[in-house]
Image 1 (cartoon, one colour):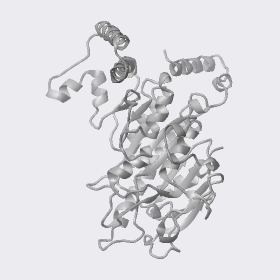
Image 2: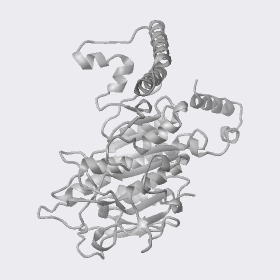
Image 3: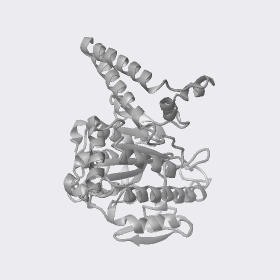
Image 4: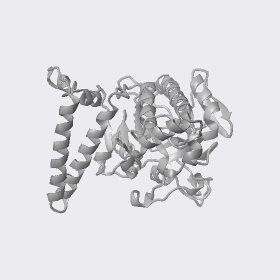
Length: 421
């Protein structure tokens, strides 16, 4: 039984005898804070929700769009996107919008790498993998990937994908053999499987003890850790379904279940938008992006409702101890092209939701030429003498918010202290 299993069991016992589990467990701390990343693949157009370009020369705003406001957060509303307005009004008090975030590139793969790792190499771990690995002893699958891209770096033992065709579920049930070659498969009886698991674990321990220094030792230790997690994961096969589709609502259900069971600290979800090119709208930008924004915010509404309705580990609900980060790898050009589409743009927007952040506000903005404005990192306010609002600084802020030292993972920047409370 790991720490999360103990807490869940203890909470149930306390509730049964009439005591408050939260009173016994105390206030949430950064170690119990969880992270969900929702990645929109293809490059969204922030002028459809987050960024007001009505008064900017050269910015083509959508026909029928209008300014609106939820609390202290201005946004762009449209009659065809009721889910956006409903979400803004329901969640503005725990919402932080960052506009004019620079990603330094306009190629999908490179922008994706920078947006999730702050690096261009593709060899670094992403924000969720880092945060999950930091508390890896407490979770069987510290970072569960249900959709979208991910970068494990050297933290592969802390990361697992469910697979788009139920591969993880198939591994646990034995049906993966049928997926591989059409041969029906099943797991051995539990006693026999336990004997094999113990044998493999002993062999892995012996290999780790006998390994030489350097890469050999690292690989042996990683194998031992991966084997330990694989054995522990079998206990979850009968208590949750790992099958996740490309639909954000389905991913939300699986992800929240993984957090509530203490299986994972971090979850990554993906929203492709559907269609051949998804959010990569080089033609007919308005006709395509509008419905995708509506679908995205419908899924986010489901996600936040599940977090609100699910008890947390150290707080009343998962919503109180989970931060949600919603981003895309890039933005889109301010003006429409000849095909009524919008091309790649290196400035975008990011949405954060969660306790412990300076919320109900918009930070940054799009200035001359639709480029990001500089901000004062101490306050978060726009400042001519400030620094660029880069995706690296946003990632560093998220890591600090999760109780980590971002300097160990991100170079050339620091957290935006004005966003943390």
